[in-house]
Amino acid sequence: MVIDIIDLAAEGYQNLSPVQLAMVRAAQTKKNEILAKSGQEKNELYMLLLGQGVARSSMLNQRYLEIDREATAQIEVVREDLNYQLAYEAIGSEGNELGPYRYPENPNYSLAPSQRFLVVRQYYMHVTTNPEARLQAYSMDSLARTYLGEFYQTLYELLASYC
Image (cartoon, rainbow, N blue to C red; front, top):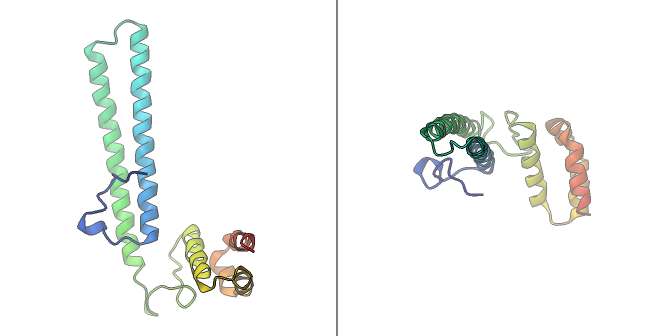
């Protein structure tokens, strides 16, 4: 996927965390969907006007400009939302009075459940290379049950699939 919703080489975007990169990818997907939808709308309009014999009219170009403006406005909303999310995540990822956020010492409860899943999965994937020991350690982790909620069983099944 080509990322062009923001310039990742710009100073403010160089050291993004994995969670922030996931946010960028999601925003890029939304942008790509908006552009695909506007392209499809332009194609349908062209086919309609072609069928009526007026495809080369100035009306087509005018409507193309309107479609492009609408798409640009929608993309700008996505970009602003992404910048807000990245700024908020940067503030929340620093830590609290107990120190920097790290699972299991100081878990970050402000993360979304899917992001918590990724944090815990990453922790257990780096604890040991032995899949059976990893699964046993995870099954004995009472913090993971409450921290992950409904994602606990999903991660258990994932870790069990490595055995």
